[in-house]
Length: 297
Image 1 (cartoon, rainbow, N blue to C red):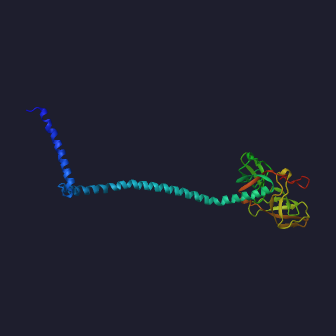
Image 2 (image 1 turned 90 degrees about the vertical axis):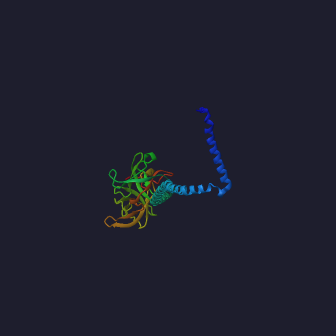
Image 3 (image 1 turned 30 degrees about the vertical axis):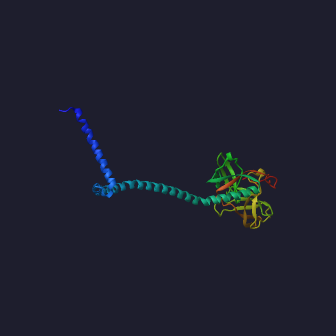
């Protein structure tokens, strides 16, 4: 029996021979090209494994495409959500555009009236309609004592006189409308500047009217004459010169030789939105020509 150490050189020789043989085959294959004896084996391997490789690629391709599909669907879903949100925003803008346009026009008209009369005003929005105290025609506005608003302040908009403040708390105030049956306002008629008293008929609709009785019963207003406020002491509850309405018709009473004029108000009380409260004046308002006796209703 040979020693174990004597068999080790033979075991090492076999791998070396295999490597040398492989190198020899590679060298011949590279030098001979298509005439290489290995070419038939390569073709045979290609014929066997080529279809298998193609099949595996075809089988794997749908799996790879699923990832692309999921990514695309997710992206499209996000884009669709963004488009829907934008569409909703545009629809909201479209629906509110008329309101914003009307409010801007109202503010511009009010500023013209206020600046022309030298008035300092606080603009507020009508947020409620309903009775207050013993009155039937009132609105609530979203400004109050924190904004400098208090009772017996004149309220107007771009069309003319709205009414007066009857109550105020920190963040809101109640306005008695000009058309209330309990409301009485002193007015001047046309270019004659004749004085009279205006009373509402309690109708908030567009058919609501004011009734004007002149102090001088012999004075007969003309149809179409403009009526403005004559003003109260210190501008409370009404400042002077605010447009009220125009004379629409006349009713004469033969019994007492008096004339009552029907006045159509300039303000549409059924569509009030933005109003302005007079909180101060650049100049003192005109006081009553009757020795300080103004209507304070």
